[in-house]
Image (cartoon, rainbow, N blue to C red; front, side, top):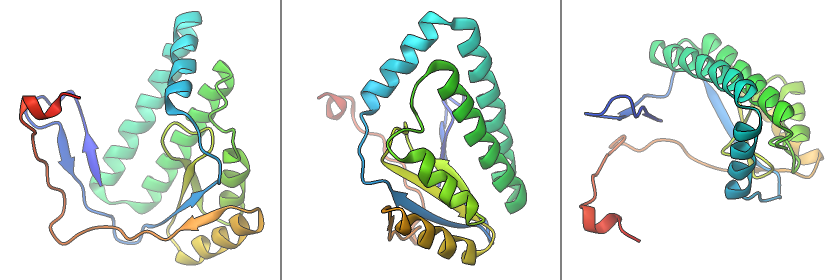
Length: 178
């Protein structure tokens, strides 16, 4: 896991360990989404309703700060609470701006994950694509997998971590072009 904090100019990327007792699975809705289009919708919402947008963004920032603190401390229960709170705040932002972040099967998939006893979290910009399931009990992920598959969604079989951990390489300026 890596944390990107642009406020830390000297070293904005920090490698974080995976907390013991936190289990995860990733599911695919079978429906892709355009991040560029979703970001365009978010920008339009920001321009049309700046005060409402800012209020939602501040709440999302608070949720992210709580999640980062919980992750640093390795408290799985607090991490799960923070992830649930962050997802709720994202859903509220989506509804306020009519952004359809939970479209493309995302809302149905997240509901199935939560009914199975795990915490669901939109991955990326939403609108379909993938969702995470997080739990403190691997049986909840098994139940989420069965529920998701019953709805036609698939679990991506991923492995986490490498022995070397996070490696940050800075590309020369000429390699960043294009």
